[in-house]
Image (cartoon, rainbow, N blue to C red; front, side, top):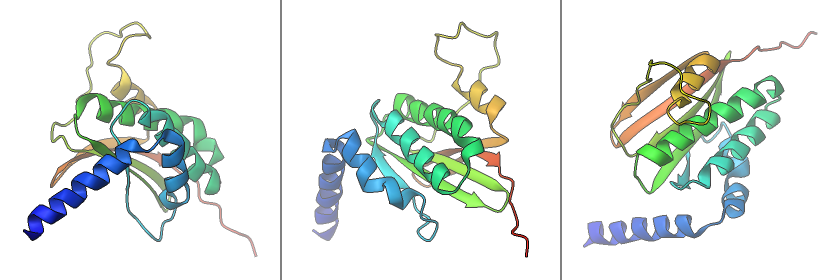
Length: 168
């Protein structure tokens, strides 16, 4: 009976999340995503409109952390990972996490699929065709990869961050 009640609660929470507009999602998560004291992901509905929301959330974190030199790459790479998760994972939600470690910025997108991404190394397709996302990630990120999780996978990229020390 308890398991059934918690399943109903989870389903209700998912349905509520899916009803939120892009603006409501941004408002709800804007400050939370960059809060390193709570190293947790934010859950976003797996739908095409989530890409722009995720990009804006990551941009707001990078701006708050004064990582302006990484705005363009961070936005593009986030877009690629979120698009792949929405297009290929078929789950109801995706997770987004931004973490700053000494010398590195890491953005991870989690989904419910355990199928690991693979980069197609065939000849380049015209710019308007799909299938070039991981090539872009490979070209722009300093490191990237995918990890199997107990319930799905996480695909991530990392960018090197120059740490400035204050002079006394």
